[in-house]
Image (cartoon, rainbow, N blue to C red):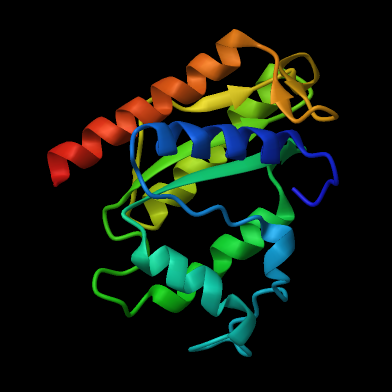
Length: 177
C-alpha cells in the first residue's frame, strides 16, 4: 500500500517478526519504495532497471508472503503491476515462482473483499507455478484489527491467522530442506 499509515505494512512487519522469531531470514519489499514504472511488454521485454531489485528478490527467495489492500474486491493496482514484472522471469529455470511457497494476506474494510483479494492472489500464484500455503489471512474489517496510528495489531484473531500462516510456511520449508 502507498498509504502513509498502512494496515498492510503493519501486518507485513508483524509477519516479519514471526519469521525472525523462528530464525528465518526475511526481506520486506514495500512497493512504494521500489518506484516501479508500469509494466509494458514492449519496453520491458527482457529487463527493466527499476525492477531489478524486485526481480533479484524473487529469484533468491525460497518463499514469499504477498500482502495487499483490497480495492473493489481485488488486489491493488500497484501490487498487480509489481507481479506483472515476473514476466521477466519466464525464461528462468525454473520459470516464474518455480514451485515456491506463497503466504497470502489481504486487508479490507469488510471481510468479503479481503477474501476476494486472497482468491485473486491464489489464481495468480497458480498461474505463476507457485504453491499457496493453506492458511491464508484475509483481514477485515481491518479498522478493528489494526491500529495504524500506533502500528500494532489489536485483534488476537488477526495475530493467530498470521501465526498459523507462518507456522505452515516454516513447516513446509523444513520438509523441503
